[in-house]
Each structure stands twice: as structure tokens, then as C-alpha cells.
Image 1: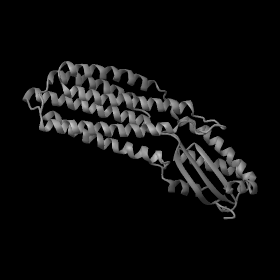
Image 2: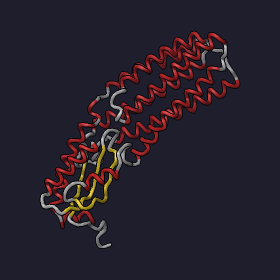
Image 3: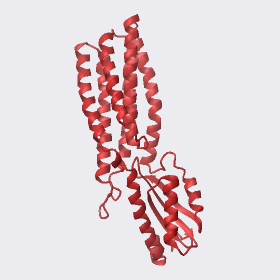
Length: 321
């Protein structure tokens, strides 16, 4: 009701606000997931799935539970890449949304959900590794260090190569999740290679689970930031590094703007940010005011999706209440 009343009283300003949203929306897609494509996810899926099968087979034939456990951990990469790649494809498929459909912002939020799922999957995998390592501390098992070193070394090369595919576009939380996931596994693989070498030289089988526990700690530290950022985006919080107070102060510097209220900033996806705000002003050139305000938001804060409602006086959010 409040929005309808405002449209009636200030129809000219409100129509310009609608125009401003269209302009900002078009700009925002330059930063969307269409920049990179999903070929990286496909390559990562094929290579890692093949390696999981080979590693599990090597572990079975050599009676190495360590390799079979690591194959299970690498399988989580395949699932994570599948989620991330699927979300990126959905985000591009519905990037522009549909005016008459229910998902007017498209499927961009799928990238946030995939990043969150990736972080949770990493934590689950870390728990499984820590549990297995704890059991092996008390019940050390003979380790065939030669096979372990060879297969883990191959895993390091594959995981590192896959991670490098996602090294760019770290502003995309979804790609960042895939990158962290693969780098974490590369660290696991090189740790297993080193442990296998020391075990081969010394016969200290207990070193294998101890190294695993240390690697789990490193992975969890790296995953915490991803989990926190993805949860915040899922709750429509402002993206990391985006200071809402600074945006409000910036809008107050636009000539003629006397107040800013109902300012909301949230992530449409892991790459796109949206903003809505009410600007109280005393200018007659409302078109120029919108251009100045939107230009400031794009230049200083990199936000392309903007909807600005112009008011000559602060409006009651609930007239007649």
C-alpha cells in the first residue's frame, strides 16, 4: 500500500526510478557469470572422476586403506565441482530473469547455494579424514609407501592443475569455492607424498595419520572464510568488503540529496550485487540526479543492479497505520 501511494503522489520520480533500475541492471551483467563459461567444471569433473576410480583401484589392489580413503575424499571434489558447475550453468541460463516469471533475478542465487554446499562438503570430508586418522593413531597399519607416494604424487598434479583453472575470477565465490577445494586436496596429496617418503625411510607408520590431522587443520582454516561468506550471501547480507555505511555516506554527497533511507545491499549471486534505496532530494532535474547517483554507485562500489526511489520528503512506510 505504501508503494502504491507513493507512485500516485510522485509518479514522475517513480517512473525515473524504474528507468534507473533498467540501466543499472544492464550494466551489472558485465560482472556476471557469463565471463568465464563452465568448461573448467567439465574438465575438472572428467579428470578427477577418472583419478578417483584409478586411486580406489590402486588402493584395493595394494591393500592400502589410506589410498582408498583419499579416493573417497577426492570423490567429494567431483561432487563439489558438479554442484559448482551446475550452479554456474543455472546462473547463466536465467541471468536476465523474466518479467512475468517467478524468478525475476534468474538462477544467480544457485551459485551462492553451491558455494555453501561446497564449504559444508569440505567440513564433512575433514571430519571423515580426522576420524580415520584418529583410529590409525591407536591402531597403526603397515603402509606401502612406494604405491602411496606414486599415486598421491599423481593426485597432487591433477588437483593442482584443476585448481589453477579456477585461480582467476576469485571475486566469484563459487569459483573461489572450487579453487579452495582443489588446492586443499593438492595440499593433502603433497602431504601424503611427504609422509610416504618419511615412512619409507624410517618405517614410522604413525606419521601418516599425524600428517592427516595437520592437513585437516589447514583445510578448516581456509574453509572458514568461504563458509562465512556463503552463509552471509544466503541470508542476503551485503557481500564481503561492501560497507553499507560507506555507500550511504557516498549517496549523501550527491548534490541535492538530503537523506538516504531504506538502503539495502545484497548479493544476487556470487558475482552480482543489488542495491535499493530511497533518496530524499530537493532537485527538479530528477533524471540527472539518477544518473549521478547510479554513476557514483557503479564507480565507487561496483554495483550494477540499482533501484533508486526519489522522494521530495521522507514517506511513511505505512500510511494510515
